[in-house]
Length: 274
Image 1: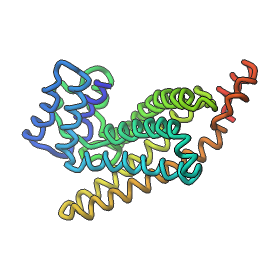
Image 2: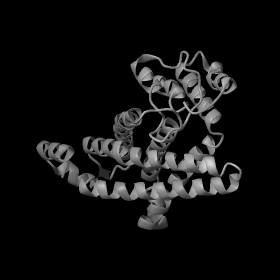
Image 3: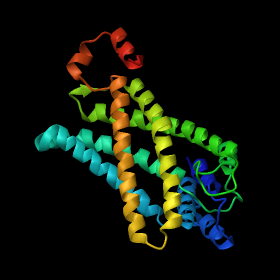
């Protein structure tokens, strides 16, 4: 994670930033030199703010929109009493979703930073040659932009697997009256993050690049459009997830029904894609 966060400081920064921006971004992690991952994240945040002063606003709005949407969907589905009774499940669901949101927004954001010392390890060196997203500003070839899309697909697929495992395990722990199969959930989140989320967030970043360049003089309108666009993206992502999870028949099973099944039946449910 530290390698990815640090090396992404040079991806997507091909289009701007002079010496001052580079220095500010690269020095952002200086206060955390004793803790490498914190230093990498701090430097990454500085690089993103140098390239886009609205980065923290976009990150905050993305997380807030998703948290509100999850709450509204659960309230509508369960009612107020059911919502309170399922609060542990909803908190676990929201936590995993916010982890995914933060990762996607952070790694796809344009950056300004110094390449010196940033590209460490094979992943860092690869990311140093690619844009942050396929529509990032910079003198990148079409091949590099396509490679960036597929690289992020693999990266987000891995992230989806990890967050799917953590989230499903947490839900199974908190919601003791039901069980969701972990392997199928990991696969579902991996494919969803790699294909759906990766594609949607690349498009969102491309549209935001256009808005940033045309409405930079009107910050109120710019931020309003960002909120609307990201809210629509979250809604579309929710629909994608419902369709995908329904196709995989990924849904909680009453714990009594799960415990009554044989080991062979449990294995089939965990690894079957239908």
